[in-house]
Image 1: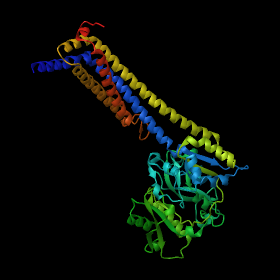
Image 2 (image 1 turned 90 degrees about the horizontal axis):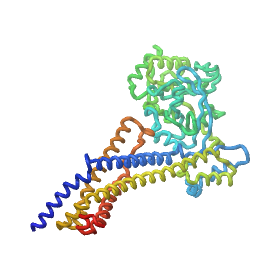
Image 3 (image 1 turned 120 degrees about the vertical axis):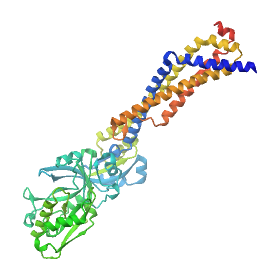
Image 4 (image 1 turned 180 degrees about the vertical axis):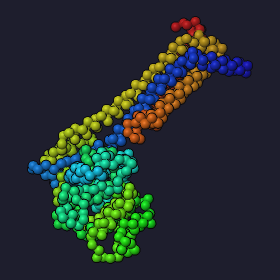
Length: 522
C-alpha cells in the first residue's frame, strides 16, 4: 500500500516537472504549436469560405445561364426549342428552366428630360430561376425589389440596373415607383398630352426593381407581355393618343399617404365647380404593380360629359400640389392577346456545367444551331476552376496537417531523448510502462488541446474582424468560414495524431530496461 502511494507521488511529481519541460521555456512549444495550428485553421477557414463561394457561383443562374440566339441560316431553331422541353433530354444534359425570350431596345426619359436608349430582354416565363436570382435579396439595390411571388407574366414593368437608375437621374435614396417609356403617339398633343421630339409621349411603366447586375450586360428585363402589347399593330395599347386614357384619372399613391390626405390633394386641384362632385376609389391594377408599396386610386367625377382638358388640367395640378410626394398618374391600358410568333433567343439554366460541351455538340449535330463558343468556353473554364479549387483546398489542408504532425513528432522525439534517464529512474522505482505512457499522453494532450483552443480562438477573431470590417468577397460571403466539418476533422486528426505519436515513441523507448535508459546504452 505504501509502495502504491509512493508511485502516485512520483507520478504527480513527474507530471508537474515534465509538464514544464514539454512546454519549454516561456511555454515556447505551446506558442509555436499554436502558431502552426492557427495557420492551419486559417487555411481551412479560407478553403471553406472559397468553396462555399464557388458552390454558390456554381448554383447561380448567372453562371449556369446559357443564351442561344436564333440565326438566319439553315438551322432548325424552332425544332431545338421544342426538343428542349423533352424531360429525357433535360435529364441527360442536366438542365431545366427553358424559356424563349426576345431582345429589344427602347427609349426612356429621365427626370431631367434626357432620353436614354436601353437594351433589354423580354422573357416568356417570368417565373424562372434566372429571374429569381436577379431579384434575390443580395442583388437588389436598397431593397427596391418586388417580391418574387408577386411577379406575373401578364404584367407591365421593368427591372433595371443601378447604372440605368443613375442615367435616369435618380439615386438609391429616391428610387421611383414608375419610369417613363417614350412611345410614338402621333396626334396625342391634340388631347393635351405633353410630347417629346414632337411625336413621342411618356408612358408610365412600373419599376419592378433595381439590381446590381443583369446577365449578358443588359440594361433591363421585362415580361414578354410588354413586348406583345407594344408591338400590337391593331389596338395600339400603349399609344397615348387615346381619348379613353386621357379622360380618366388613375394614380399610384404610396402607402404612406392616406386616402384622406390624397383626397385633400385632389380637392385643391379640381376646378371649384367640381369641388364637391368627385370621389376616389381604390382600383386594383395588378398589371401596373411596382416594387413600391402603395395602391392605385381612381378619381371619378359625377359629370360624364366633361371635356378632356378638365382631366388634363386636374392631373397637372394634382402633380403640382403633391410636390415631392411620389404620386404618379397612370393609365388603364387596354391589354390584348398578341402572342409573338417567333423568339430571338432560347435561355437555358443548367443544373451542372459538366455536360455543357456535350450539349453544344447535341444542338449543332441535330439542329444545326451553334452556341457561341465564348459561352461554352467560359462555362467549362468556370467548371474546371471549381474542380481545381476543391483539389487545391484539400491538398492545402492535408499539407498543413502533415506539417503539424511532423512538428509534434519532432518535438516529442527531441524531448524524450533528453529525459530518457528520468524515465529509466521512474521505471526503476516501479512505475509501469503503461502508467508512464498514460502520463505522457495526458501531458501532451493538455498542451495540444490548449494550442488548438488558442488557434481556433485566433482564427475565429480574424474571421469576426474581417466581417466587421466588411472585407468580403460579396455581401454575405466572408473570406473565412470556420464552421465546417473540415475544421472538426482537423481538430480530431491533430489530437489523434499527437496521442498516437506519444504512444508509438514511448512504447519503443520504454521497451528498454531502466539501466539502458539511465546509462544511455543501446
